[in-house]
Length: 177
Image (cartoon, rainbow, N blue to C red; front, side):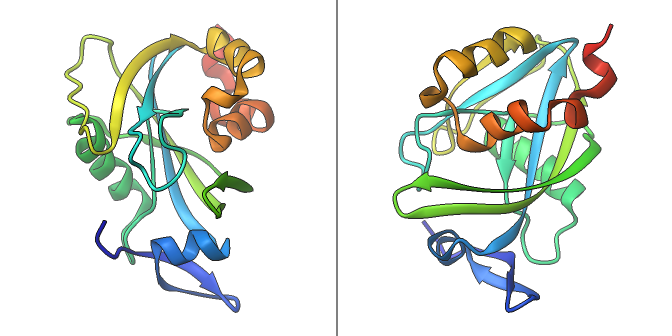
């Protein structure tokens, strides 16, 4: 893995810090999460086993850290393309959420996350980058929340937090039809 600088707060000041250092020290940092939806179905990704943390676990469509000075919306579009080969979607900003979670391997996520959502159709072209994603699957929202409660060890900490603590803020009226 190459060195990657991401926006993190050090002594109250936002500055570019190496991604691994950010997670080893549990520094508060910027992040982006995207949910691609087809009605009440969400596109999930299973993280590649080789990822530096949370490998092999199921997560929302795409989650990442913006580059230094990269707008969150641009980051969301970039990572949909880089992780999943998805182009032509322009995710809408839904909310900003902060959480802190131990993600294993001596790493801590303390993220200020810009959450985005994009509407799509299941038949859209998805070509996962095998270095990032080992599998994708469309899952009904209510089936997903039930499965996360039954078998939380299969899912990333942040997806569990989003669904358990911030579901209304992220999905809102989308699920009330």
